[in-house]
Image: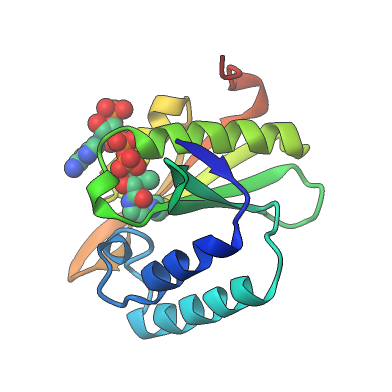
Amino acid sequence: MSIRGRRPRDLPTLRRWFTDPQAQWRDWDAPYLHAAQTTGSLAAYVEQMERTPPHPNERVVSLDGQCIGMVNRSETPPEDGGWWDLGIIIHDPQFWGQGVGSRALALWVEATLNETDAHVLTFTTWGGNERMIRAALRLGFREAGRVREARLVRGERHDSVQLDLLRREWTPLP
Ligand SMILES: CC(C)(COP(=O)(O)OP(=O)(O)OC[C@H]1O[C@@H](n2cnc3c(N)ncnc32)[C@H](O)[C@@H]1OP(=O)(O)O)[C@@H](O)C(=O)NCCC(=O)NCCS
């Protein structure tokens, strides 16, 4: 498993996963947003990827050379303020729960600390996404905040959860 820049041959796979409105990953990644709106922005995202070269703020998660997901990051304004929010999607549920996501996240944290002046990193998720929360905690992230019952997912209220890690808390990967 590695993270790497996007290659042209990844695009059909990415298009397939990002434009399937029934894909299971959508039940976990921001399922509290309105589905129709998400479908629209994902279609626009795929078109933008198809038109533009890979950006360093996003990488493909690659298993045996095949694209199985993506990691991304964005700097919380202002620029050079030192706060980066990270994201991850392993598209195919057959790869969930086997440590692949945790490994990809570790590589992404390390890459982000090496490539940016980040002082603090965050993940933003919801209380029902136990795999995401546990993966982040295992990497050394701490719970930074919880807005109770802020997210409505399939008729049930869940907390909005943010996790943070300071640069000085990170132990570089061997
Ligand atoms: C979130 C995601 C990246 C996690 O990656 P993963 O490869 O599935 O997770 P891992 O196998 O590395 O396991 C992470 C933790 O979750 C736990 N876990 C695995 N399956 C679980 C399950 N079904 N329920 C609860 N916890 C589970 C693991 O035991 C591990 O915790 P531990 O280190 O304390 O033992 C991946 O599941 C995914 O992409 N999901 C869909 C999209 C998504 O939710 N993205 C994040 C949006 S904020």
